[in-house]
Image 1 (cartoon, one colour):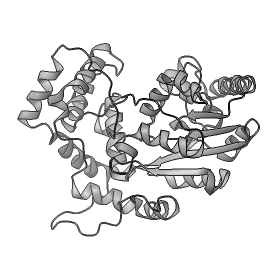
Image 2 (cartoon, rainbow, N blue to C red):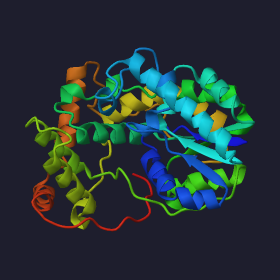
Image 3 (spheres, rainbow, N blue to C red):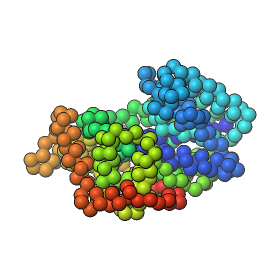
Image 4 (cartoon, one colour):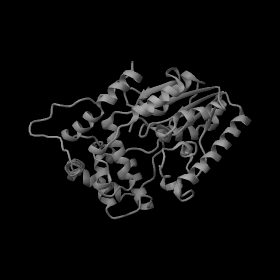
Length: 355
């Protein structure tokens, strides 16, 4: 039996991949592929929590059921036992597991060894994203999740692009021939779509599979992100139904979606990330991305005249404030306000490309 493990990493279309696999489970079974979605209450964490980094707290949604790390690991062990029993009963030729949480577990060799107790072959698929794009996407996710003040959000000075260590450990654990790494960018992915690209990799090393792409966790433009940052200062819960409805209106509004996307434009902030990640990017390009688009982040010594790289968090956050609020032009603010107070139904799901 063969298992293909999708490990993310974070902000590389994992939610859309999981939603598409979940929606197409019956179709996948007919094609000879069993997708294991995990167990509630936090499905994608059900197998990863047993091997979570030491001291890593359970997610907010999981804490209400299992408040401590020890309790979450006991739950995860039970999920493993249920999963292994399910595989023994089904005996699928191909199984797919997907969880972005697997990109930063503490004991990757032990995780792979556990899989080898059940499966004859273990393959891993991972995605890499440009550090600058990944920073913006992570920042947006933090603000959408209720991050209240710039003091709660990582500036480029404290941003950690730490994928080299995890990807190296997976390569060493399963062997280079069983580890597929893809660059997450519109021009590198099959049809510009993370879901279809993932299915193409599964088809190439396992069983030919095909299901429609499902949209999930869609990005919103820079002006909407800046507006949400101000809304967060009201203390409104990230899960408040009205707040969630407003975000959905932004996602469904053609006028809002036509606004400029969140992109790091401040040269000093760009230089911080480039200078801090160039070594990792060079290694990842050489090790995993031969024949694909390379990661572009590299040393940036050519700053505009009069621009210097900040060395303190306060200085970096001041630049972040100016950058984010710069999206709130009068025209963009009017567009955001119109969408925020609008009523409308959700548009049908269509294929998700790159956020």
